[in-house]
Length: 296
Image (cartoon, rainbow, N blue to C red; front, top):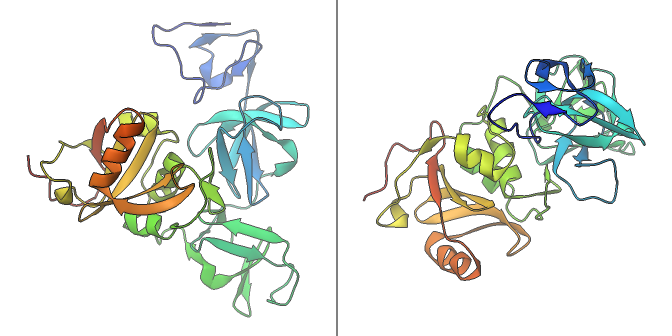
C-alpha cells in the first residue's frame, strides 16, 4: 500500500493498513481493497483500543459506553476500525460492541452511574456507565431513567444540550482518580485523556493525544512573567504531557509522578519536571477561557 500524498497520514487518525483502507481514503491511499464502515456502538462501561489485536498490549486510548465505532475488519475476536468521536484508529474487543442504539439524549454527569435491571437501588447492578457516556433515555420510573442498557438513577444524567461551561471545574472533579496510560474513564485516565474528556463534556472538540492537542486545541498563549498570572483554562504542554491551569498559579493534571490526578502549584512543578527531562514547551488557551492574558 502507498500513500499518494506528500504529507504522511497519521495512522492514529486514518484507517489504513497494508491490506485495506477505509473507503473514505480511496483517493488518498492506494490499497488492495477499500471498505465501507460498519457502525457499531460500545455496550460496556469502557473498552481499550489497542494498536494490534493482542489483549496483552497496553492501551492506545479507551472507548466509553455509547461511543460509535466504525468497523472495517474483524479478526481474532477484535474489531479494527475508527472511533467516530475523535477519529482514533485501533483494535477493540468485538464483544464490547453491538448494534446501534437509539440516538443518545443524555450524558452521564457524575463520575459513575450504576446500571440496574430495574428501577430499584436494591437490585444487583448490571454494571456502570462512566462520566461522559452518552445514552438514550426511553422513559422514567421512580426517579430512574430507563435506557437500552438498563436503569440509571436519573439525577446522574444531564440532557445533551445541558453542558457545563468550565473544563477546569470538571477536571477538578477527577482529583484522586488513578493515572492510567491510554485511559479516559473515571476509573483511570492519562493527561491528555483528562483534557479530552472534560473538553468533550463542555462541548469543546479536542483530539486525543497531547501532541495533537498542542497543535490543534485552543489558541497560542505567550509565556507569562509570573505563572500566578496564567489564566484559568490555559493548557501547559511538555513533550508528551499536558496540564490545565486552574488560575492563581496552580495546575491540575493526570500524572505518573503521583499516579493520580492532582492539583499543585505550577512553579515547583516546572522545576521538578525540568529536573527529569525537557521543560515546558507550549502554552495554549482553551476556547472561552479567561480573557486576562498573562503579563510579559
